Length: 479
Image (cartoon, rainbow, N blue to C red):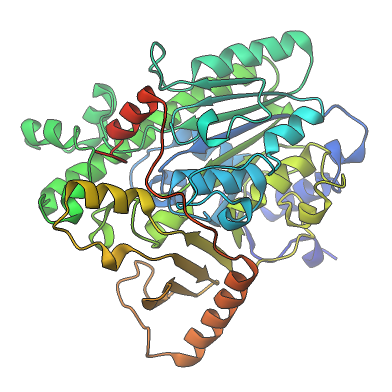
């Protein structure tokens, strides 16, 4: 009886005893809004840590304390050790987050650069269910022009003038308004701080940049935003420069954590913290010299696909649990709908079985990630570096990962195979040496691809908004 109450793939945090674990799980009701007890629906706070790789959070093993706020959330919630994105960059990964679909299913890929109107979003479902849906977003890819504002009554692009600030101010006001009105909120926040250029505030730079670093080099690297020169061989980074970039990146992660502390503090002050489903998740990671890459354009390694995921809502999730099962970014939407009492409606019943709040959920045998032809990257390289041969980059990429092995398939080019238990940093490509494993993963991936056909590209990047174009240049997406 006791063993059956603990789903496979779960382990306790070291500070939590077996008796407390048993009591906590007894307190977790069956699925339904507040356990089907007829109580009020929870508020929902969905936070994306844009460009944040899991291994830079202290609760995921980073050797320095970068994220005490998120770590504290995990101590009273659930931390997912093996959560993975569906794509290595912002637009398709947010499409998955907003729809519960893979990018090709949502028709929002590196080749279309848009979330089509006919795909229903999480915000639309929450709004239809009576939630006040609002968003504060710091990344220009997640914008109305790309189709991501649907369902939100208020969609604040905090990167635009005259705001030019992280998405902190708006949620503080929205929390206050919700307390006064008594109407539940669905708030989506996108923090884009750990993104090139890594230019943290002085107090965070002082904490994380090692003493003795050349201040001129630190200042120069804090302004590094473009990666195209790096890829075409016109910019070289020495080992110490990579280490400085990693320190600056860690400082940016810590900066976001502090901002989240303000928001969580406002929820506590309003007496709403325990009545709010809080989901903190990455959309993708970042390469900082890893595998010869910089940024997140052209890689499908764990540094880009393994993301942090922490969920807290005491009425549905036990305290201090660490889940080691494979979970996907597409599991977030059904989890939010389920915990909010919306799952089970005709529009969402087909994905309710993946809700993370249910201990009876179907365990994933593998996770999938994909990236279409990187048309924006190809366009920029051909435009600004016409002498560079882009043929080796012009392909779709898909990957499949189970609890041990990972296959990366560059469609039309070849495969890579890694044993993640023996080689977690993916330094030894085993393709061709373990044919049975490779065939099995390739067959599963090809079957998935057959059921998710590729769609026609849009060609080179098309952005009509001059301010958005300038912001994309500042982030290094275009030159």
